[in-house]
Amino acid sequence: MKFGAEYHFLDSFTVRAGYMLNYDERNFTAGFGVKQEVSGMYLRVNYAFQPYGIFGNVQFISIGISY
Image (cartoon, rainbow, N blue to C red):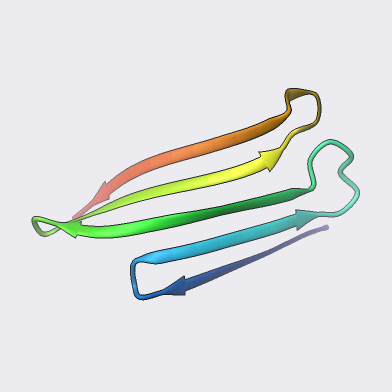
């Protein structure tokens, strides 16, 4: 079973957290995102963190543009 929550504020920031039950190597995740308007387009940057068993702590970064 998996649980997660996401909270948006100021139309630019997002905070995320999640938990997975019955997963030995990975169970907790956390992250945040930022959205900024630039020249009529939206630039988004997201970061996430997840402990991942033998691989240690794994970090994810994504960058996106939408118009």
